[in-house]
Length: 438
Image (tube, rainbow, N blue to C red; front, side, top):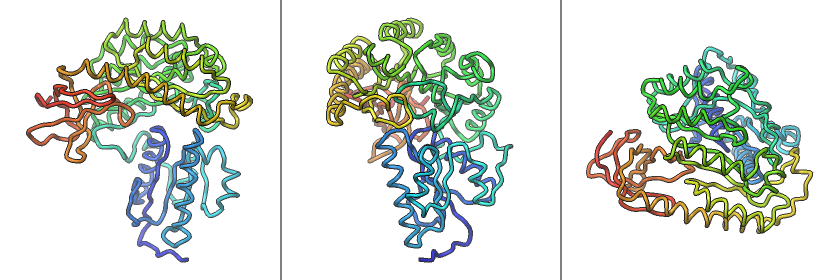
């Protein structure tokens, strides 16, 4: 069916997967706009003629979602509602040859590092002077800042290096310039993201430079919150925590995926750290910064995992009392060293173990939230939903952590900070009343 041609191209970008993918989509959007092409992000309307699907290829569920999204867009093209469907991102990088044969209706496939090539499809030029310039798709008061690309780690379960390549840091000056540009757009909180934050700078400066980057970002006027995501625990540089302690606008928050706590599993996962070393690290971090919020991520059902390993992990959680925990079930990924192992934990057992582990954390989270009742926190209002204001403390990142349901006699401003007294606690959320505007 022939599609009705619009007066000019309008491009809708659909982003799947992690915040790093979101930054890539925002960068693409910024480049297209600079070339005078209209761009939308995840528009529900049918007022565009071109779609770019930015895919995730991390685990089975993400791959399935990406393929289903591509097929949905291809079907719209078949019905004459789209002219072009382009696909980029991790799934495209990893399985391009297979996908080209299986879904020939896609007009072009691009890898994770082929932005200039993709722009040629739109007769657009890659504008190097726009480094760091993006079309923000987040609410204007927060944004992600990707400080590096790729990863040099060799974790047995992870396919990210296959899709994103080796670690490449962005220069400090470029990141500071980007942060200043975000603040000029109204951003008050930036979340530093990378596959591995602590490795930052080793490639271009020959030493770990995250502390220096943090010093310089903390000096950016108007930047009220800086948040750290995805720090690798092995050989963790404690200087990072010292820097956090020095700057009030660096959130007392650290996202440090540990993946497991059984030494058998840590060794099999090639994590380069033991449970004892992790416990010592957590103790050292809390000794330097007692009020820090520690978030971690775990994997249930890695090959060879036993009930005893799960019990060891549960005991670790009870001892460590993490503030935030997320969990994935193991996905058997081609190209990883774990793929050579037998995926011997049944899917239903993986799921049951994940649930069992999260039940331990649920109790911990509730007790920690209960202790906040009566206290007053600085809260950033993110949105109003179903007549309620939803915000976050410095101990909560977007989407993955707790929210504060805020009541107020007067209208609250999105993107504004308020002092909120906590009045009620739940397993993962809080309720509170506005005391004052910050």
